[in-house]
Length: 138
Image 1: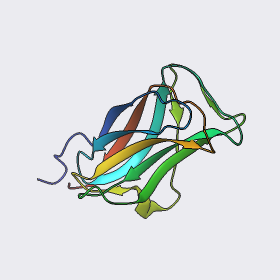
Image 2: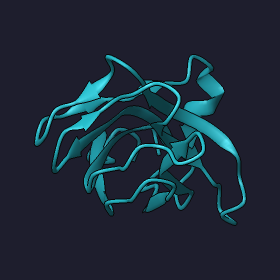
Image 3: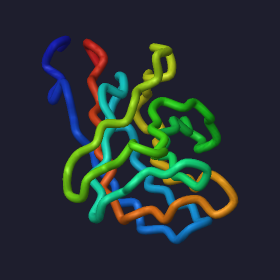
Image 4: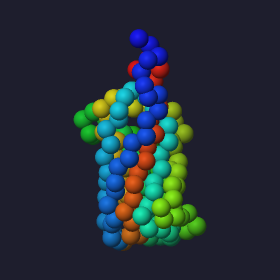
């Protein structure tokens, strides 16, 4: 029956391993139900201090059912003055395009820690935390 699906919001986390300069890392989550990505954040084990030229960007992609999608749902560039404190939650910026936030049950969601520049910035081990909101009736 409609309205009986629970929970209406679900938080899912994935670990992303620490990376050296010049390396990237990813964590994967499978969307629990049809709905939208309502929030995305990270909790690094150690401080992530942004820097210009050689930096790090965290991105959340919806890779779809087959794992080949390219929809960028959320991101944050850790450049000069943009930091993530150790053991504290730091929000990522959701896409302003509503369609980029739509998920289907079983979609593969990738959280990517990407080096930017020739060597990039070393990335700490972190927990990525995503909040999914269920589509009414799903």
